[in-house]
Length: 310
Image (cartoon, rainbow, N blue to C red; front, side):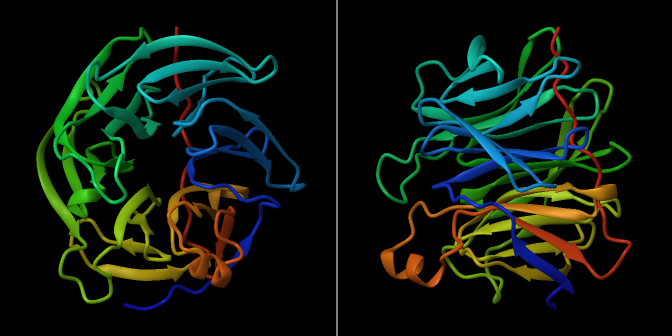
């Protein structure tokens, strides 16, 4: 295992408490993301460095453009999904999930058919304590039909699909594992879950380090951010072999997505939430957005998909 040859730099002039849900819009060059703790929606213009933010109640974890509708996005707030009109800051209710459970939506993104996949998890009412098995993984299609795809989850997190749409990858952070499913692209069915990467027992992963957000490159290698690990790990889901590591300036690195010219830039979000004063004094860039570019020209990803909503 070796460090990847790359250039990492801070690109946001601001920091957030808990950055999540990065989504790069290739039409505008804007990187959208949220702050779960403050309830902020942000876009960062990756060409100019300018940015804009809108604030709602805490509990936001994703922001995804709605296809064909300018300045319209789907966002989450606790157990609910809304469409956001950025220009008016107005919200329109779409649906809610997990009625009667002490959960909230966590990570989510769209497949290539424009269906939104997202998971839920227990609220952290006590530091470091999560009730196990009450989270779920959902799919919502363009007609707002909601389907539960997986239950008995604790901290639903990163999602990705292989380039041939035959595999779906998903993280439960509390299990410290990345799972691979067989994926039926037409129906959205997932089956035959297997563990393709396991943080447990690995000498280079500390005991409180967990897999968080995730993306995939055009070689079908997964990139997983480490909360409490200060790194991004590239690994082969077929063999489970670690292919390289990027060390980051923030121990709580939260999520990743591809963007930039030809999607050769990896964007990372991070957090200050849960860090001690000593940690923050040593990590002045914690909570910022970072970009990573590579010396190997063959490393690149693909575009993020928008939500198709009728």
